[in-house]
Image (tube, rainbow, N blue to C red):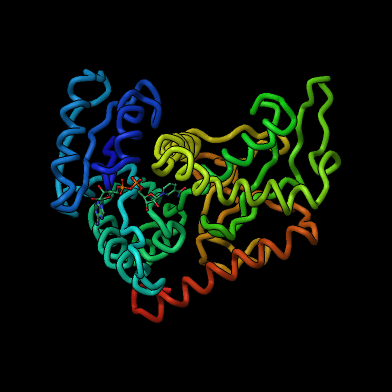
Length: 333
Ligand code: NAI
């Protein structure tokens, strides 16, 4: 399998590539040709990482190519992890940030369209992830739309971990959490369908054990602002947990998720209009992976508390979409 990682010389790249090459992305039986895409000033860091990858002597790592050429990076690609993006610099307006990233993700989408394998799967990690994925997808008219996704799995994992800590149980005792909307501070971590297996062994709905004040004042901000908390405590942004979530996303996409009640996960996928999210928007939903495709979990009842929060995050996505459309960054709509 040809796996392309953009921004390979960055923090997430460094946390991701070793686990990926050890088999945690596609399993222990799938050899990988790695393509590391960087901008010229990032090539040396990517080369350094590649030296260390060689020194790990991973049996699955068939080859490593380091390049700043989009055609070479995406030719025959089966899995594309689009991590590199333009961070917000001091004084940068939102429109400037969207425009700078449009200039990255438009050409990457076009290169994927031109050269990718027919089964390509794309995960956008680089922020603003949902809208970057939307831009890339619009430049890839020949690739099925559902192959473009953005990462909210880190938010999902954070929500699960926070609930587990709250109830003092293992993360394996939590099911049915969902992240809705944008991978931003407006995201909505929804526990209204979540259950917890308490230490007593009893499985209960989380909504019966917590009140809306705790959700609004503590849980939701804690999950949504966890990235800032990590930066404040660690002095650097979350890279290892982001890398872990990217591996989880692609692993589940390629291998399917369990079929039991509530055993879904979260990913930003192309909306089919479900739950009032405008069709075509790349928004986070509760999803299951079935036969290699993400399926939005149908038929969930949306509490009033949830509805307003989902709508607010989706409105932010609509505004981002309209802004990049106005900047001429969407090739098709
Ligand atoms: P970083 O700054 O350490 O590394 C980014 C790398 O991307 C740099 O080496 C840079 O040279 C490279 N790059 C920039 N433009 C590029 C281009 N056009 N083509 C190829 N490479 C390019 O950043 P870090 O910590 O690795 O984070 C990467 C992105 O992931 C950021 O946008 C960050 O906000 C985002 N992120 C997303 C999360 C999510 O849950 N969706 C979670 C955490 C981070």
